Image 1 (cartoon, rainbow, N blue to C red):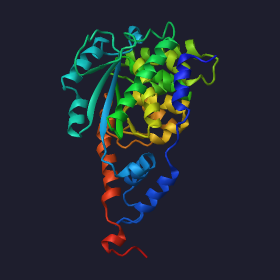
Image 2: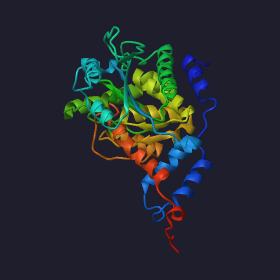
Image 3: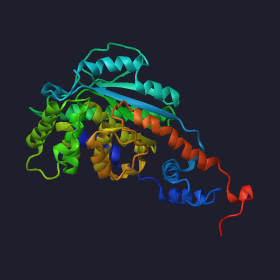
Image 4: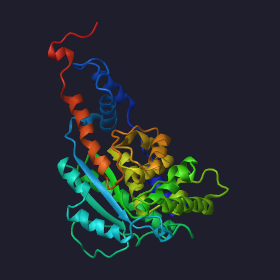
Length: 358
């Protein structure tokens, strides 16, 4: 039976095309005419060709970047899976709005406009200016005792992401970074990673905000218990069922934004473990999304490598980070911009009058 969430996703993915291989081939051919030894710009050439395959004839347009941070709380924090109380989600949203967080510094430095979205924070923000108010619920339910979300909440959260993506298109964005804030969300991402890839809880569950050894073992145990409760006897649970049972409102919104952004042919730079969990769910639903994704970095969370390997995505950066907020994605954006600048501004052998290799 079709659920509300499947109806929302089906509408999104119906006409979602992969990036153009014709344009990628043109890009590769052009890169080979530039005044450099063949392939000498390494990964930058891959990024430039991917960018061209996504943007196609719009490659000459200036890059317009923005970062979107989705915030929500998680009922599973009642199980002692985080070193910080859930109030920190609310407090960090206020910090974002006051421009005091790491992502604020990096977004300002790299000219990426920051947008903060309340999709499920367990607090009242009233009409606080600067915040995008899209609260679906005050956090998810405790997934140890039942599904994290009702299907109606899941559908609503996905639509939040879709609407934010459409706003990004209207604002002329060409490249977006996807980040998050939510105490307890690494537990959710670990459960998603295990359910999608078959990885063992111990292999996909890290220390999150800095758990000690005993608390980390407790977190691994919680992830295992959650997986048994919701998916025991199911070899390959459906992506939306994974999201409904063990996901978060911010993860659902990020997944919706990723699906819609791919449909609108935006370049999508994903951040750490949690945003990659959203991206992996999006790819599981619509494999054509894969070509629109750039992995900004690989975090210290072990589950992040599990998901990057599953998606066959090579991170742009390896900086031993584990912060979230979109920080790693924003740091990678200038490297993508550099790749495109080299592609569009370097001279060719012919135009420069330089002899090519024999």
